[in-house]
Length: 161
Image: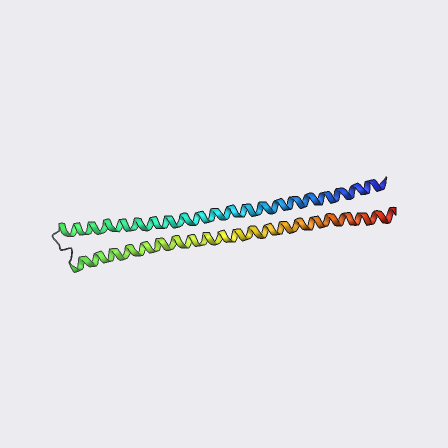
């Protein structure tokens, strides 16, 4: 009767290893899917950041156009010449400042988008690495289950002939 209990224990140990291997394999798939989902979200964030930067740059340009128009109107209303050198200098300064603001808005957006894309790549690679680790764990658990059966069979043969 002892051999029946021993055999049942061996089978249960091997079945436990198989179940654990299956869970690890499912974990591997889940890790990869989750990482891909996060990477897609980060890439979407990068695209939205660039779109916002472009929008801000356009907004700065429109604001500049209004400022230049107001400056021209003020100069003309005061009886001044809009081709006067000092007036042209004021307008050139306004254009220069707005251009710098536009460049900074786009540079900030591009930098942020670059960081999001880099994080997306890192997340994808991390998902692959975690998936591979879980797959390797599943393989080890299957081998452990097979080892349990072999050791049990050798022990059974030694005891019962």
